[in-house]
Image (cartoon, rainbow, N blue to C red):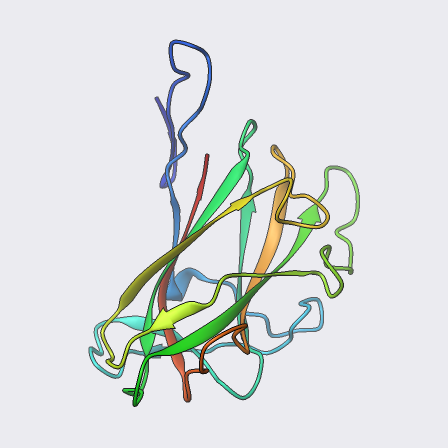
Length: 192
């Protein structure tokens, strides 16, 4: 078994089938800051001390303006799925259950070629993710979504390639939008 940072690559099974890759974890203070025009959304979800526990750093996403954070990942050779996990909460107790919309922008960092100024994807260079459910409290919530690399993205995300991603908060596709900030503690990305 090989390890690269906090990414662990397991051995091939007896049938030579699936690999199991460990999760890459991005804590709030480790996410990139979209603060220039090379980002598709040049608006930062700022890092701040968590209002409920100042020992934690979170990213605060406004409900009125699309703000984001970024990260870079190499997709392992042989991967077909991408699982995203979020640990997040409402900054202010909502009066009832609410939802948060999230969007994932992406662009490839190619071998021996310039990084494109265009972010690939459907229409505006993005993938709308499933809404995140927020109950009527300010406790951290764990949510996840699994996406197929060659079916859920347009154009496809390709194994053995490196991508830059920007995660932003947008209006939810269903439910009632969370009013006020959405506090993001952690993003995990796992490939299978």
